[in-house]
Image (cartoon, rainbow, N blue to C red):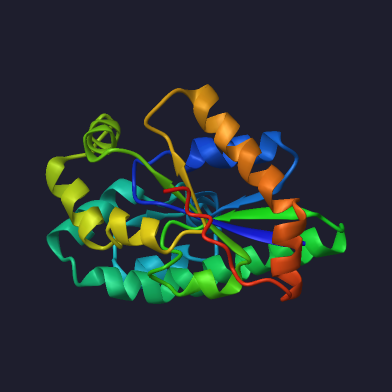
Amino acid sequence: MILIGLTGSIGMGKSTVLRFFADQGCAVWDADTAVHRLYAPGGAAVEGVETLFPGTTSAASGVDRGALADRLRRAPDGFAQLEALVHPLVRRDRETFLSEAREQATQIAVVDVPLLFETGAEAQVDVVVVVSAPAAIQRQRVLARPGMTVERFEQILARQLPDADKRARADFIIETGGSLDDTRQEVASILWRLSTPEWQARRSGTLHRPDERGE
């Protein structure tokens, strides 16, 4: 199985790209969806979040993400505590997905991990794909989200590796500043290139890693 690590900063279009990989028949896993499961009523993270940030959860709705975001905005030091709680649970969810994918003899699996580089998870994948877009488009997309503010956007960016650094460490870069058809074609192109003898040789260790950054 070829394991693709999909990453990119907020607002770059990872969810759309992940959907295009799924449309191509890949097994896909989304970190944000995993967190939603963990935060849902009865989810594995709810009790821990309430302990760290009292009043941000309820039995009926699980973790109130808006209340939690507001608490973290006022006390950013809480991010480290939250990550220490949630990241191991997310990894466990991802490992379950990968175990099932291997049991089903999946050829290509894609894991969407926003903090792939920040958490060192790039060492666990075969190929890194970075989703990117011009800064102006990114900003426009993010600030259009309900409840998003400039302050919150900048706070999120400060916790993520800069886009330029991610691009420099990618095997492939998918640009999402153009049309959806362009993005869809980039996904198909990557999957085709992963099927070529050159990349198969790289996986077997008989070929030096090529420059596949597309720049």
